[in-house]
Length: 155
Image (tube, rainbow, N blue to C red; front, side, top):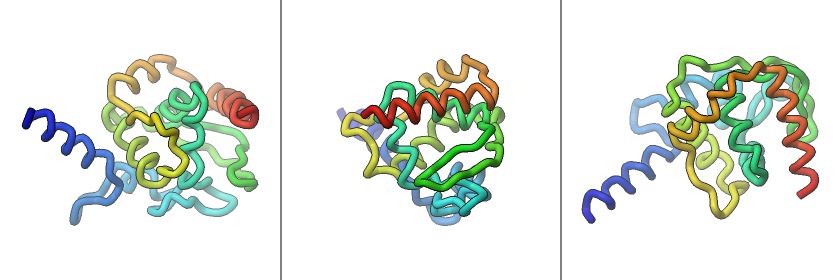
């Protein structure tokens, strides 16, 4: 019983956003250069991740989409909160499956908590591994985003 409680505590700490004194989070190391430390992006250049991507989990394809964007990048114009962005999102193939899960959980629980569905389950390395097997191009992910946005509008 004690080991289960310890595992739960460690897991919950792994999904919190604040860095431990002096440590840089995966988000800060890989994403903040463009999306900023507060995940609010840069107007006309880099879209916000805060208060936006959590809603993608309201539809089934949202989880795969998020894994694919981090893993394979994204190209083409997108709109977030009524603002248009048209810069390529770089891919992060060097991040391990566990790191992709960790950075997604960091952004979702730290900057999108209010948008998460009540039954939100954090990403796992195993889930990421399975979703990364698709090996998509940034253009294919842009098409997936279009489908995702249409599905969100139907909700």
